[in-house]
Amino acid sequence: MFKATIEGMKGLTDIPGVKVGHASDFEALTGCTVILCEQGAVAGCDIRGGASGTEEIDVMSPGHITPHVHAVVLAGGSAFGLEAASGVRRFLEHKGIGFATGAAFVPIVPCAILYDLGIGKANVRPTREMGEAAAAAATAVAVPEGSVGAGTGATVGKALGMKNAMKSGIGTYTVELPGGVLVSALAAVNAAGDVLDPKTGAILAGTRKQPDSREFANSTELMKRGRAPGALRKNTTLAVVATNARLDKVEAGRVAQAGHHGFVRAISPVHTSVDGDLCIALSCGALAASPDAVGVAAGEAVAQAIVRAVKTAKSLGGVPGLAG
Image (cartoon, rainbow, N blue to C red; front, side, top):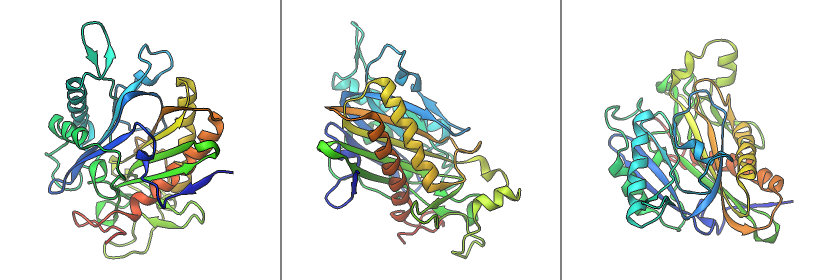
């Protein structure tokens, strides 16, 4: 049995070698989150949603020449937000960090985006400068949660449009395995569907029946009855799992797959054609552990990180959040 804990834990930065930094624009309601692993991390990725927006994802494939990634960027701004990754590469290049090519060190920085243009200012998106600022702000202290970074403009429950949606954001959670192995997840939750309590299945945040109500309409039932108008095609939940266990690229990919069990437990409906749901797994340590055990813990950590993303989100842009 593994033990999940929050008290005394910092979230994704519980994993040695991992730093997290946010950059937030609270006027335009967008931002980005940077996960730095400057010593290099073995990485894997699994995409289940039908509307993903990504950059440098293939570097995590087992057949790719690069053995490590040096950062992961999560950003708002839809495809425009991919620009933030170039700022992180610039930040790392100035520190001499990257894949050695003989002529230069090239930082390996996968990036994934979510759609937040429907809240705040649609013509303001994460930029190279914002990405560089988030990287410069990255620390190993407890990760700020809620409506910050890539979660600044995140919302959930959009089956009846933004007027009936709820605010979401960034959440993080750590699971402890025997022998000192830690598995932690960070999630930027911008789902079309509702966020559920993984234990009871009760809706915590999601589509409301009326703009001035806290009574939930149940997005899954709306979709089954054909009443969800494409969920606005403006969604995506992004998760990063990190561990101090030693994994190769194939095993990291399997852990990323297992992380999606957390999506299924905590979001309904999930992995739709209008969500770009993906999970990235990072191995940043040398402790021996069963990849299957790490995968089970990843699912638990992701589910709880998703829950925390809505529980810590404050109201912004006229969209109500559970944190007031």
